[in-house]
Image (cartoon, rainbow, N blue to C red; front, side, top):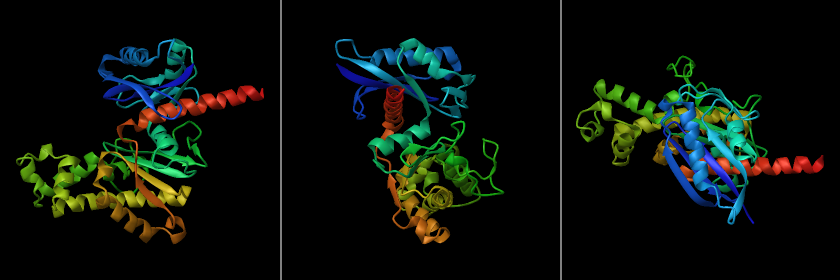
Length: 328
């Protein structure tokens, strides 16, 4: 009988589910709109409906575990979402127990960015790398840290919030309440906000024509397109973001001494416009011993990275449980 794992990604916009095996091979996938405004019970109902859709028939195989990915902060040990900014009303939700109780199989919950790091470590760009850091740069800046082959979670599972490292002590106020967070300088929306501010002050760029003069329509995508077309203003905006990413990564190198940095997310597709400046900043700020032999590489798993991370979590934790029970 074939053994499967179900992976679920609970996002603010979409809920997705897959049926996979232990190697990360996906056999079936489904998705639906989260519609978070309809409330917690409705969203959990949609999660269960997706799990039902991917669940294999008894003659095909069995599900040995379910992995759940969700936005943090959350505590993976009891499997509780502490609160989720993009999911109104989600505070202290025992999501793991709710799903485990409905399906009767071992169920595990993890922070989506941490699980993306786990996925890239098990199946992607950082395969078998014992010490690596994953950073996603898109609407926000998130990350996950793999240390000695394990996710670094901290005492309550809140660790590795790399987007909320301070990179400017007297900087911009972040939505998290801190000032000068990396997310406030390198995320897609922050790049767009800084660019719009410059254009309103008189800077010249082809991006103005791209949005027919409506500066409110400018996003990091338009800036990326302009930068690729040779627009000096747009290129400077990505260099600025790359500098702040370099500052943040330099701190991570000093703290965790990884062998690899994996960059994912839509903004990371700017490629060398970011990485050239990241490297310049690291080399200017960190001793050689920290960056010699370091690799900075693009993520390999694309949009499936969090789902594959949920699968990897379920596989790893169910295996760990079996080993623990065998020793008892």
